[in-house]
Length: 444
Image (cartoon, rainbow, N blue to C red; front, side, top):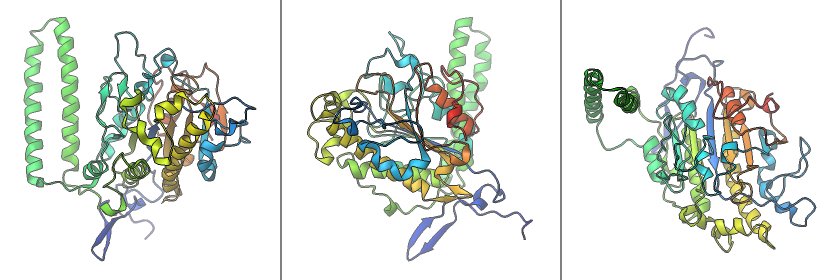
């Protein structure tokens, strides 16, 4: 029997007592691959705004500073990151990194470039592609959804105040989802329309696109050079729509995974931050576990002060004032402890997510072993766009090694980390943004 091929449908589920429970991604679900075949490689990026507390070494409140004490393998996690101690061997804390293009930008402007490394200056707010969308462009056709873009605010926001981390190849923001119920319905809901109606709509869309592209050929011959360039840019957008239509047609006859909606708190909203953050992390976990997507991003809050919903989150642990205010007061008496306590709260929720990934077996390792997770901010102290607080976790089976606090000089751009991550994900890349090479320190 060992030489026979075998396959289990990804829609297979366990049923009993009126409840359906989706199976995790099993070896036999990998398109007929043998159990020793390659596992899916995944990426998850989580962003928080406003920076962190950074009291100086030797001061009484140093334990409330975000960055660890010491360096290398013998570092000591301070209070804000203590919840991550059980996962020490699965993560690396990074210091000193930033995007050189963002160092002179306004402190409220850098969230847009966290995953792109683009230069946004003057009247030119043209962004570039984010790392998740770059990766999705290479492997997104292997899953129902090429990527999953989430934020607490939802939508796209406005230039330099975006409420999404994800940007297309042309630098356009990808709208983020914010409602747990809406996200669950998108990922696992069956929908109200019949399959026949969906197929008819997709076929009609495909026919219209075919007609448009055919007519464009005769039009292009009559245009001047500048108009041809404009038409080419427009047609590139049309082809992107065409690709999405083809992707939808491909998955139309494949049922979505059967996930019990009671496994996620779908009734919660941003007014209950602890439960809301856990629901968002649960949804990302389920999306990755069921191989519904392999690329996820979550912007906990954007950096434009009082306009982000997450600004009110600190009240959930009894802190007075908003998140932005806590960040500004971090250098005052008692300020480091206040912001540090909220950073600790965020680390608890992040640790919950990593713990779920780590406790889920997959092949010769865990789900976390086959997922690279980036967590951090584009500010160190609030409004300072250097020395980003960053953690990279997971990917042990993808060639990353952990258990260190690693500091880098200002000559090392954050995009070097992106190149390293993309390479471990098996995504072809020579350069990303302003990268100068890989980070060999992170490789096993």
